Image (cartoon, rainbow, N blue to C red; front, side, top):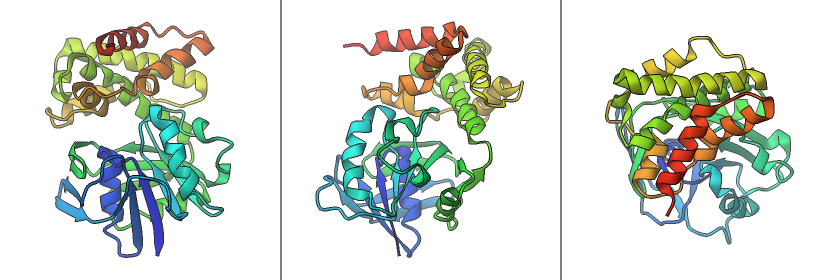
Length: 291
């Protein structure tokens, strides 16, 4: 039996916990603020359900084989409280978060060879605790390493494509290019279909272009047509789909703005690369959500 704890059962965390629990050899614990009775995920191929153990406090939890961190990037302090209980000498920890700074918050607390950063592209939306709509099976990419291979094996029974890649840095920045464009949706509170408007698409392309310049300075290898790929992806998506930044703003929650756009501004400044469009988006969303 493989014991797995999922910290943060939001859209992605809830989806992964439900799929992992489909394997009889997995004992899944969901670490949540709000208790719920069961997980139900409407997947592209029908509904799946699961009844994992749901814990609302870390006290008394035993160390597990795997911890999947699916919390927001601004909730590191809350995450560490769970890790103190769940991480033992043999525990591996996968960091499934937005952005390109997966490992920095956990460096020094968990051995480097037991940390697995992960890039996730699974379009999903949570409607209530334990209730998720998964719009596409999606994929996860992790670094090619012994721990990465073991992580990929956890999902062998699922339709989620998990791949261990040699150039993880490039994959992380490619996903950030997609995410940074989604700030437009959060700003105007319009779902993916708004990318059909060429004016909106051009703003998204500008955000991605800045991201690409910074990514290349950081050592990522990105295709020249990445901005067009991002727009094509938005236009091919369900026009009613909502990214997590948009969903969080609509619900009045805190935003992962620094991980999705602020990091481009910060790292751009370190390289002397101007990022005025991302800086503008950050400033406007901060102003729009300020009490």
